[in-house]
Amino acid sequence: MSGDETTRAAYLQERERLLRTYRQRLDEAPVADHEAIWQEYVEGQARLAQRYNGRFSMRFLLYCTEWDPHKGGIVAVNRNLAEGLAEAGHEVFVRVGHEVTSYSPGDRIHLIGPRQYDPGRGEQEQLDYDGEELPSRVDAIIGHSRYSGPAALRVRDQLYPDTPFVHTIHMVTGALARVADRPDLEVEFEGIERRMTAAADMVLGIGPVLENEARRLVATNPGDHLPRVASIIPGVPFEEQRLLPWDGERPRNVLFVGRADAPQQGAHHAALMVRRLREEGLDVRLTVRGAAPQILE
Image (cartoon, rainbow, N blue to C red; front, side):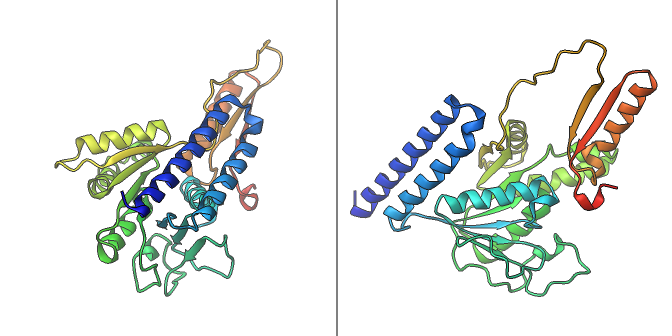
């Protein structure tokens, strides 16, 4: 083994040890301590990268319609992923479909907007390559579902043909179309996801349910290509729901978490159900957590 290979092996060993220690501490610590443990882990990763002079850090190109995490779950996952990679010592380039101001999200994160932004077009349309100053070399390209996955794949094929492509699954493929009672959309959406998984080197599911959805798509795609499948566990604890005892006297409180401005999220259906229960004489109150201040009215 050469000197570089020995050094890289030592670096990977230390990185894995840090990760194992972090996971063990998370398993043993109360939820209230998780944020402090995460910060210690991030600081440890940064010290490790510094000790090796950044020799083994990677460069990632992420594609997402927007950077602002208040716009929805996909955008929030992309931003958290970008920040996590940067905190671990990697360099991250994020191609978005809107104008990029002078705001900088950090030394290791670089936002790249359209070369010529057109306010009359949607963010998704403005992700296609049009001569933007993208990095000359990256180690992986990451796209998100049907929203930015196609544009990420096209730029991979056009500019980075030998670079691994990672496709991220954010929803059960046909669920939105079934809620909208649009079987035509279900066929269209599944076709897009299948094209992405058929070309991907890795497919990520957000959480265990979507990891299973990714495995379904990979296993039932035609051809012999079998990308690796993994999951990203969201930053929330998975626990059994603990319901407060109810004596029949106090109101029943229902909490709905989801964007109120997106019909497919289900807030309207939750309101209809609660209204029906109230009409039947049950004292039920609904709280919707998921509206930006400007749309509360």
